Length: 418
Image (cartoon, rainbow, N blue to C red):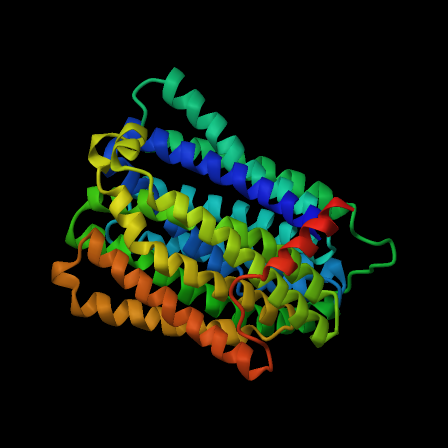
């Protein structure tokens, strides 16, 4: 268990490091306004990916062991293509989007979605190391191309960022296709008569799961668009950098919950699922607490050196958001318990509550919204989401746990030595 989790964490750590370096380069070369524009573009691609995942997404992890793989892939791919075409048409009518970026955003969303589908299949097959490699390639290759474009190109611009995404997404998608091809059994026969039932199954579970992700992403990124409208692109740039650093703490819990999700999805033992979840909750909260302590003591001067003179307030954002970031670890781990059981509606309800808190508070305080108020609203949303998930977990018969006891830590360390 610890070996798999350590592998997951290593991939996420280096991915987060690559993303941090990308944020630094964009901030240094394009300034706070350019960083804000890049954040809006990336958030838009992420929103489109959420729509694509209505048919598939994380639900593929649950359904891969239960349905024919060829039917799952055909259904998911065809839906992704349709979504990309629709979003291109939609973006052309949305004020504020540059026409020259609409096509790129739509194409990149489709390519990224194919890589995400294949990654979910690999997790469903418990080929987590291959899935990790696919996901790591995206930030790594993006960083390599951005370095080349910014340092050796002429007049760095947002177009260079798009070039990096094209290279990274395309190569990751190709590698994922190669991996998935090796997982298709010779006995897996595709029939068009299977497509409709597969669509229904993927939509049933995918819709519930994506409702959670849609509400969650709206809670997390709605502030970008509201800040942009109220305080300008520079505020978005500063806020997004602070948020990305503090959210990187979640890579610890995400590494743990990925292992948890794969194990529970391939098991029908509820008692085992709860025992595993509570053990991993203690581990995740302990490591996240230590990481947050380190993050909050980093001085403002460090972030000015890292990002530039316009980013003096990043450390204040981190300190404001630290309590909410810690508490949200419950939503991540307990949420994956319900996902592993196919009870995606729990996460949907919890994320909707978090989105409701964000929406109401942002509407009330919109005229005075700044990076500090946006941070406080985010903390309220994180806490509300986590409380709902905890409530459902306790209702299932689970136990509320925080940190492990000393003897549990010793036992865990002894097992890791074996």
